[in-house]
Amino acid sequence: AITSLLSCITSQPGDFILTETYKAHGSTTFSGIIKGTYSERGLGGFFGGLKARIIHCGGIITSQLIIYDRIKIGLGLAATGSH
Image 1 (cartoon, helix red, strand yellow):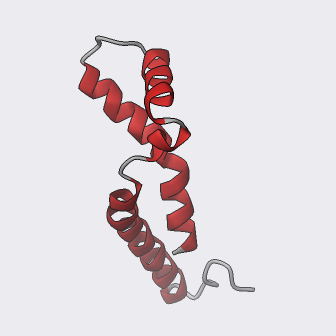
Image 2 (cartoon, rainbow, N blue to C red; image 1 turned 30 degrees about the vertical axis):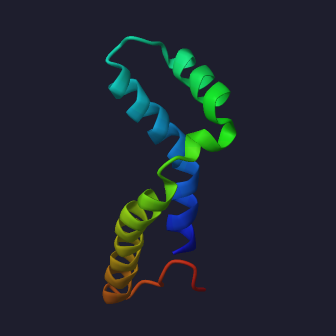
């Protein structure tokens, strides 16, 4: 769960920029999107929609990691993080 939370937080700015790029339909550049977002909203602007991303993607990532560990245990391998 901690891993999925961290992955959601660290990937959010990139996803935000990608979404803004698609919304702009080529009318602005990558650096223009970054400068515009930063000047209008500050650093926190890149984390817009983070709560929804944590709920949606966090649930998916956590489920995948649990399934991965269950498969490893089922094959007789040690679960991730165990010794």
